[in-house]
Image 1 (cartoon, rainbow, N blue to C red):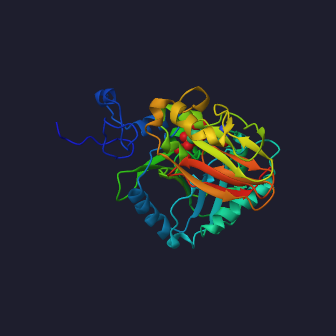
Image 2: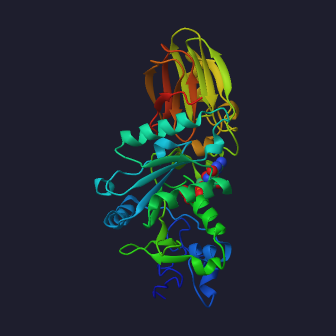
Image 3: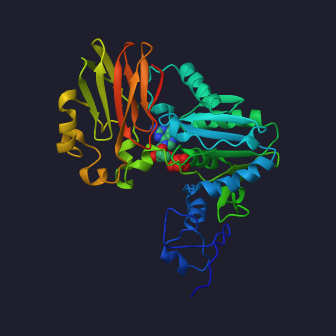
Length: 368
Ligand code: GDP
């Protein structure tokens, strides 16, 4: 019974234990004449690709091959979690042309300045050593956006193959699935899965008009993504369903805002100031006195005004770490990547931010 079953679609060893790991198939699938992993099953029956998350080591191997290619790299980042979207930077990829696409644009308030977002994204990319040829924005759940980005890719690739890369949860599958659905003719014939050499990972290649290929690589898990900090059953709460609406607070020094039990902003000192909160709909900020904040958190974390997440889930969330910022410019965003942000109206405010210790709180010029 130890005989290894291989997926007939992509050649990956099939396992029935962990649906989050490559090669997963439900036990019932082993009874079929032709055994395929869940990924290949979904691909052929529903034209959709569930993302299989990767470890750093696997991903490194995959990038080895990308670095030896002569392809265009398209990196998708989540505009709602830009900090958590970056992948480890490798110098041997620098020679490859790069396009960065900021996804989930639909979640940002309509009043956002698109050029400002592109500039900010470019700055963040350059800070990390990326030199993108193009930066664009999209909502992968909108077909027209995906088609526009596909046309941009086609224009930039200059006959080359294309690798689509991105951290888990940035919307890579949503993007690829839109493209798969847009293919004409017999889609099953057009899309192939191939096993990635040297690893047990399957990935999808889509033949392009001129014989080149578009490769969908598995998404790497970045431990610094907020959605990894919260148990799976409550992860959905972090994913806003629609455009984020601002909630404005006029605060005096020594007041605190709680964002559920996941974050806290202490306005330590400064003139009265406005704090504009942009968080998913389930996280309604709660205002209290700074002097009472510790006590309130100790007694009520995970309950009513200080939820989500629930008390039970909170036990799995990394402890909150405090970091103090002095706001140097009017209209500065304090960003908690993957959760949301607060725009502080005037410079001079001293704000202590508490967030899960694995999350890097950042400042940026206000995007609105
Ligand atoms: P992947 O892990 O990178 O493949 O990400 P998925 O495609 O599975 O998307 C992760 C989550 O983001 C899902 O809940 C998607 O519905 C959501 N999502 C993806 N693209 C968009 C988008 O453009 N707008 C919004 N609002 N949600 C999106």
